[in-house]
Length: 159
Image (cartoon, rainbow, N blue to C red):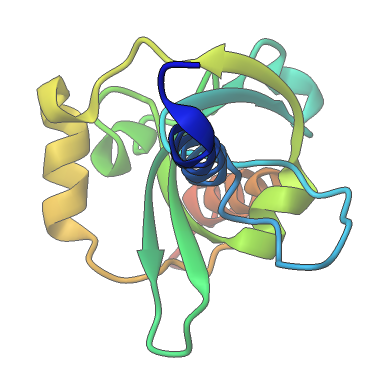
């Protein structure tokens, strides 16, 4: 043996640290849960409206509140809202939302894999991010947020 017992222990320690760093941030310690392992850059199918077939969610970012709760930023492709003012909110017709960890857990269904989209090269996302620095309260799940957005757009004001 070239490295001896100390070398083997050191290698095992390095492997353990690597595995811990690869673990999901959403799984609490000492508790077996059936939650989804959510990471930045993943693309997911989600519980969507019937008209949004083929719609997907990309996890863009995660923020921590003062109360130590996670708020995720998501990008939702394939949303069908046929209203002329939809482009006033999302120029490229791709909505971005803030959503709580529970809301995201309740929305996501199947992991597709890593997204090819890059937030640093999307000027529409950068524009949205500069204008929206706080959590939105359109609904608890992605489906509810999209329904609420569509309802707001369809409100007719005036007499």
